[in-house]
Image (cartoon, rainbow, N blue to C red):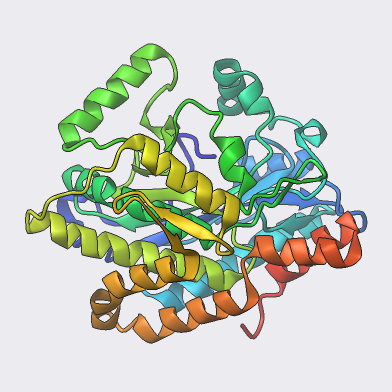
Length: 388
């Protein structure tokens, strides 16, 4: 979850008036659960939350709405190797701060067996205001996400890319699932976070806007309605940042493996570059029905890479790996032009080989029948950062 202060890479890209072309810069935010190092149960750490709020635990760390969560934010990056190094740094910083507080970080979107009832709201005015506005939705916020900011030169470009990116979101989501379990139940989903998050009034794929003026009108209407306080409370799957010259993709589950974070960010940034170029050339923008976009989102959350994904433009089911390869084909020229094609293809093949975090968690559960083993495996994978 992002509020007015948060969600930004620690060092912002240049102001919009001097910004680079779309997709030159990018950065990642990751949210983690905090767990006991022995039992792996969700463990509130009010002392850590307080220290982070006072900026005493590391410059890349931010508090979250509950004291069982912690957020890390990379600096602005321009290349994949740089982003990976940043992610290793920020995860290590988060893990170190957690260890000093007697807890560990769990890099997945849901905790396998504990629930919101083990959480406490972080005592800060902004979070108290969120509870006042959204009541039980805020109190039950026991999910974590991964957000990618991609630099754009202006709001017009952000909206043009956002409109064009909507049909691709389900494929990107399917590649990141890490929340098969919720409250000690196998939900049957790869990203139950997506389903849980959908209860909020401003989540999901945004509808077609067409212009920055229309975007501003929608924000103004939502503010008047009382649903949001400002644009920072738009929780769409992607949105223009309220305080940076970036387009923010918010759809992904937390990727347990660092390389899967890099892969997701690489695909997102390439997609922004490709779609910005199409917009600049005046190419028509597909406008699939919002019902079809929601259906595609649900199938991706339900089946991940293990079933068919729904193409909301062609209105057909496509095997997930075929859908991923189609996305790669659309991005191939751009990725090659930027020297990223071989790295991205290699990361995709390794993802196919080992499966998403959700698949690996479910395999552990089926093999052991022990919730603790599932959680312990997530912690090990998410913090084993060397030599990858």
